[in-house]
Image (tube, rainbow, N blue to C red; front, side):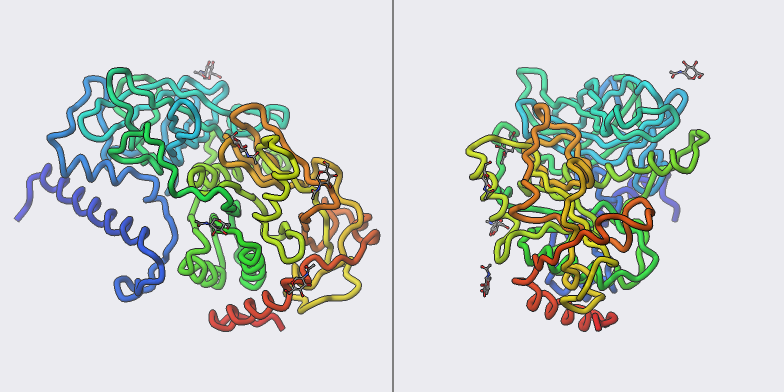
Length: 490
Ligand SMILES: *[C@@H]1O[C@H](CO)[C@@H](O)[C@H](O)[C@H]1NC(C)=O
Ligand SMILES: *[C@@H]1O[C@H](CO)[C@@H](O)[C@H](O)[C@H]1NC(C)=O
Ligand SMILES: *[C@@H]1O[C@H](CO)[C@@H](O)[C@H](O)[C@H]1NC(C)=O
Ligand SMILES: *[C@@H]1O[C@H](CO)[C@@H](O)[C@H](O)[C@H]1NC(C)=O
Ligand SMILES: *[C@@H]1O[C@H](CO)[C@@H](O)[C@H](O)[C@H]1NC(C)=O
């Protein structure tokens, strides 16, 4: 028997919604339950389905009588969406494209806001609007978006034809006397009215809750998270990853958010282990196409590629503004080590106390290189590079170079891997002096920028920053590599 087309569509939609609901419920389950009995070898990673408004679609299909059509706009369904890549919706505009990634609820400031991460390859950015979808009988609203450029004009840009990062910001204030309520889905459009071809879930938006109650109960004011912009390794770096994660765990970071592009099978094993422990959250991402056909030299292209790192970092920020107090964005070859026997959060607390109430948006650390060629002896197995290397450059990299910082999630608006780019008020940075407390160590094979020789190779000093953790952490790494059936350290 064939169902009429409408009913067919509807049943497909219901099947998709229901499976998405199961999927979401399953994602929110504690990971120590016996998941494997439900699905064979699940990949417990966040994929692009996280970005779609399944909560909203589902609610509308269960309570259709509560939703009325608007004369100005129609809410898109899953079949109305245009995609540019697996996780990027696509809004074609005159002379180019807007690529739309994720939307987030931002109640941190006076005005309740929705932030949307997009790329656009047209300069100047055209006027864009948010169509905001609210639950129940609340009419949708359309609002002019204010763009925050996610890169610095003095670093060149925005450039026509290049995918430039923006954080579109839309106010969610409703026209009085309507009650304040959070929108739960948003579309980006070029004119206030009209049908949209994109729609996103507004992540963390409270569904059916009066937003004036500003509940913040789940935030931990001393909690720190690390954001790792992405893993793109075809070779097996699983040992290095375990060492890095185990040290970060030892320093009492609460969670590590890792973005992945393409990874070796053994890295997948490691990530699965940490995801199931609840220590790591993995998100699969992809890049939208660069279809402008702009002619670029290789060096131009590489430099412009740095803009792509801002997507995972800002996603990491906006997913976590209400969850963690500090975010640290570092790479796999870097680590910030607290003073002996301390944790990163006790170190930060001490720094806050020492600044007698002066607020800051980022706590900044100078970079010390630890080069492979500078090691005169090893304090552990050479494969445990961070734990075995103790000879660091005497002089840190010049001020401003390769610095890393803890970003204050109460005030930062645009992340970058060194320093925040934009804050609620002009960004204020607090520098930790080169002598500490705490050290940013940067483990590299060679001198920077392909020079054969550099002072960091000779002007070195032995400093055993990891002495108080070495024995414990080496034991843990050995244990984890063994249970995951990966190559041992020695
Ligand atoms: C599109 O490109 C053409 C040719 O470069 C230009 O004249 C026009 O102003 C552009 N339109 C917009 C809206 O950017
Ligand atoms: C908050 O985070 C700190 C630092 O990681 C941790 O020691 C503490 O137990 C956390 N508190 C709660 C209530 O989770
Ligand atoms: C760190 O803790 C260990 C074991 O508790 C102790 O032996 C060592 O003296 C401590 N180091 C410092 C610098 O406090
Ligand atoms: C506290 O601040 C003073 C002055 O800024 C500085 O000299 C001192 O080293 C700091 N102490 C710590 C523990 O950071
Ligand atoms: C973080 O930012 C908030 C909002 O601007 C501010 O109130 C707070 O004092 C800042 N934290 C620190 C440690 O400066």
